Image 1 (cartoon, helix red, strand yellow):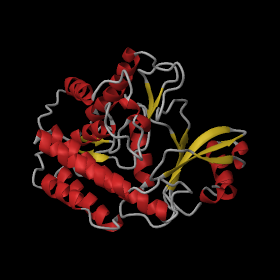
Image 2: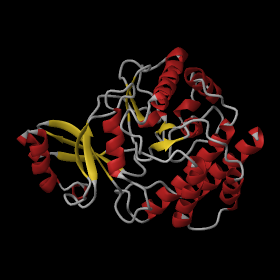
Image 3: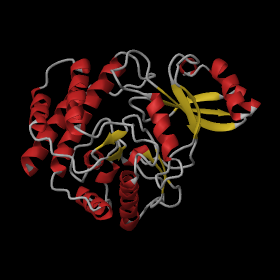
Length: 341
């Protein structure tokens, strides 16, 4: 792991940037859970910080942009959306071989496959957790991008059509074989792109385990992480992704993302959608399109993960054979269109 961070080169620079010579020496630990950009905890006498960098090997065009991640978190500092503080950024890649940034470590809990003993034991606690997640998303979508210094962070006009083209090109770059279900899903989505009602800062991958919760209060989000897909666009794209990740009882357990919300006491997707609508005043008539798009997008993300893991570009992480998972997600997306179209 150390060769991916280069402590021999980073240590002196970090010590100078943070004004503490104790940062010249630190240990490196890969933080589990990342399927795209790599996240490392750097721990030493001076404390702990977190470093984000792209995966090794070839990357897809426009992916893994460290400068965008750092910029949006810097812009959101001081807003109702909690984010880690960016401490150091290298956009050149000269120091460790790739662009990266270092951010403060937020004391919080990542909820993935199970809850810690005694955490959010009652159904009311789990509903409060869901509500906090939705409320932070709504808060993000209410921020004026121009006022936050992000007026040029994306191109809202034509956002969804452009997203469909972009993700289709990502599929063409990473697929190992044809998949009729995904092709059909993409075709049907392209024929049904809704007119954008408004634009906002969108996270691009908003879900429970991309947030840090308070260790004691499940109704408090301490930080929102993993901003690599953020841009300006239709905020319903974020809600669609959140609902895609939010699994319900009886649904298949996904291979790449947690499914804790299938458990007892968690509210269903309808509860999340209704709370978002109330908090933002958004009409959800076209939400099915955005849910189906989330399936299209994540099926392609899963294929990209499979390709990078097969090439040894995921710091030793392996995820098994994902071909069936990609097909299942695409077929599920078609079912969303058929059910709600």
